[in-house]
Length: 459
View 1 (cartoon, rainbow, N blue to C red):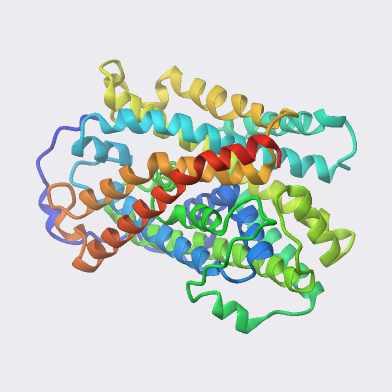
View 2 (cartoon, rainbow, N blue to C red):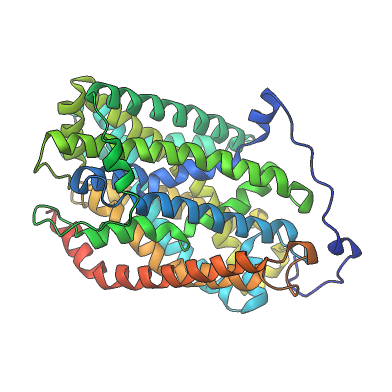
């Protein structure tokens, strides 16, 4: 696909007729990209960071979770609007970025390769730990997790090489979301109490004092959580998932908006349940902090009983397995598209032919499925530390380009159809989110050296 401007069709002056939204069971099966995307976010730290924050700080940082999810939905919707309603027929967000700065897709391809690897390493380690613990957690010695990582890798290779792989991912995401909601609802019922007042006070932008017992300061946890507010790189994967679903062109905007809300709603419920269970547990067990996945297991064992750790490891496994396979494809799509847009040799694959390049499968399989095995070696850092570091690094590397790029693309008739240009309040929100994201990114960057020291020291 050439990125040179094409004549603007007359239809850009009127809002196009929308694809009818099915009813009943047809509505459930017609949606999917939003839930697949939302469930991938669980692997980037939502399950772990929500539990860590709830157990270590009660409800004090709850506002960061709610704000980040709302803002994330707004940003992803803006990305989707560009890929559906731009003037040029672009189907990937990096094609729009090239129209702003010709060198930006190449830079973003490098960012995707680096940050995507870190993110995938977290997913694979989490799924391996979950599977290892579900199978007893006492075999194989220090190499048990690595063996389970090999199993997950093989399962992932099978899933992503099927012709209808995206359909498989959709159904798996639906099953996983329901299973995790039921698991933590049961845990909350077993705890037997819920501080409603504390829950609502947690929405009031409260910041707790530093805890000498926690490996990460509150501002670091808050930054890692709210860092997803705008600049988290996986936000860009939605365009590729929409394309896999067949949603190309402005007539799919309405069903896309419904799909995104329907996908993010379960994510919010799941995260709130993780946080609430951990916060309520901390009320009964003052001084208990979480710095490793073992601490999470102990929390669930005390709170729920023998079945508690099983529920936790099941959720960790499901969360990671709804992330690792689809994002191996999504990251490869972004990386190869960025390379094609920025190299002379890659021009032959533009126009929707990115995946015909043999390099696509090599990047997907080697870069985002096989090499992440390194994180499952016995000497690798613990899951909690790797999770927070991975989220923070990917946010810092991708944040400014995503925020500024989306603001420029969706706010101008130069890039958008007339009916799709941002209204003033949408532009204002993007500017506010951009400022917040830049400040958060600076805070994260300042803490990265300490986070790396903590992660690799094993403390």
